[in-house]
Image (cartoon, rainbow, N blue to C red):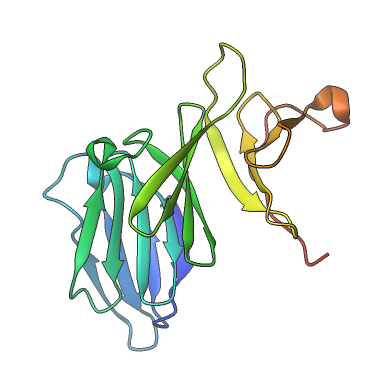
Length: 178
């Protein structure tokens, strides 16, 4: 299991490493597999993000949005503007979806279009582990070896072990209430 979230539909959505996504109505005890593709990379789930009317599914084969009632879905890949088909994590900011990849690029999906932000990490390709925002709307990513990096803003900003972090290998990032 790679991700478990409670959707706004009241069901639990469970992402798996190799079997796709399960939708579980835990109140009734029933479960069923929500097929996101006929096998292949879309079955390898990295992250689930519930939003108002559906769920975003980040996988090794791209990004998929599925309505909670399963009446519709749409899949996005590099051909549509994703920076990579291997999407590591997601973050919702209002109507915008921030999409993190394993190649030092974060994309913002807004009004049906992708806007890419390349992280200033030198020659090193960085795997992004987590993504969040601060109270001022700054988007921050946790990385596997390059600390924490602010994606947007006037000036790039990186926080590393030399800046006071315990390690440059960060396993996630969350915003507190303050």
